[in-house]
Amino acid sequence: MNYVNLTVKEIRKINLSDLLRQSGLSKTKFAERIDTAPSYISQILGSRSKREIGDAFARKIELSFQKPKGWMDGMHDDRASHQESSSCFVPHAIPDSIGAFEAWNDLTPHRKVAELDVAIPFLKGIEASDGNGGTRISKCHDQKLRLAKSILNRAAVVEQNAFCITITSNNMEPVLPKGSVLVIDSSLTCIQDGDIYVIDHSGLLRVGCLYELPLGEVRLRSYNSAEWPDELFNANVIRILGRVFWWSVWR
Image (tube, rainbow, N blue to C red):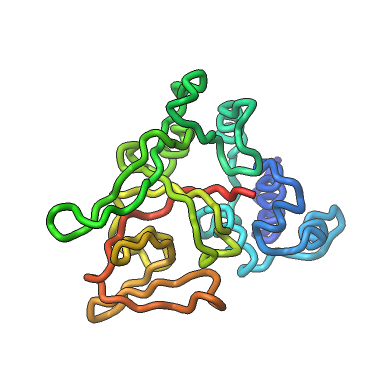
């Protein structure tokens, strides 16, 4: 197909249709992830529909599926990478997920990590002291996430720097519901305003969008702002453990 003469709004519809197909989700589940109604998705994708995807909704779609800002506005050839990810699924892979992964542990030796996969350990917790009065990260090596290497490569993440956590709060809903699994790059601890980070807040593991402020302050913002208003911290009070580069919603 020749995409040269397509408008941005036409391209957005194509990307939405491709994203729905590649996600493997039902239209209802897909709409839930974007926090909209399935009928609205149908109206946009109808063959004769004049309903368009505005800027705000396009950015919301990108955020919900962890696409870079502006992804909806350009054409992509993701079919090859989608087929690569799909080929990594095994019979007991978790449904309704982004990419290809399988939760496993050392008690299931018949599920060995394939050559195209990596095993990312979960963050076990934060221990009270590292011997110097601080805290330290502890990884749980008997619980891991099976993830396609291509995902790490596209995000330019070194395997040794990646670890997983499970969200236990509702502060990032509806984009990241309670129970979502996040994968973090622990090498990225410098704040890029608006990106999602995992932090150690006085021994408490927390997830949120960070913003750097004057006078050494940091703003922690949650998507669920009704229950979790913005919080301000001195940068010395928190420790950034890493930036979130991939997630999957578990239902």
